Image (cartoon, rainbow, N blue to C red; front, side):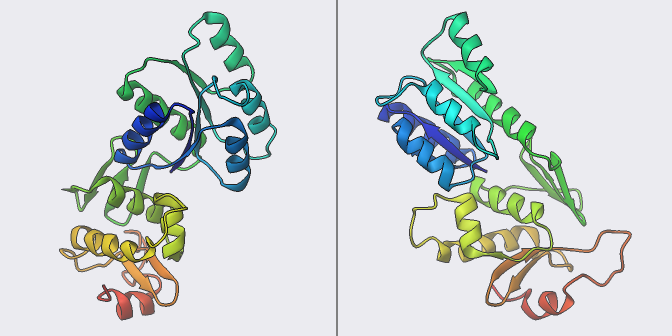
Length: 243
């Protein structure tokens, strides 16, 4: 999940970035309204957190420009404007939620998760074979055994499960999980995949994370009602030990 934070106060922007990244989200920051509009038009975001008091324009103007797009991400206004009229105006102009500063980060995170669930057509729980992922409680089990994952590991696994059977390049994984402008991360994808394999696959005869030569990685497994032969058998048998 990728979030754009539109906030001109560096202290608050850094606080939000660190907190959201620790929760497993990829975060970009825009400190002006113009930068925010450019970034929304060049990148598909899952959520925008928008301050209203921007140095170059009013945040409501940015909200209107975002709402003019064909694909509209959920928008959470985060503002020191705390009057009822301000909140009503923000919501009436298209914001999905409104949180007043100062705020508790746990409340912000809860609202972020609600908005992301609302904007996601995909289910809150993902299941591939005996591997289950709870997107809300952020829990993973395989064969009913709990698996502890770091935030980035969880984000990669969720992305792969949402794209079951689809080969994902290292660049695609980087752009979804990390900041797009952070160079040199494609190699670290291999490191995280090794970590995931050690937790998801190594103790089980059926391997789910497959190497797709020349592309990247793919997660797949047969459903219980399907044949015992996994799909993409050549990839699974040839590359499941390729770490």
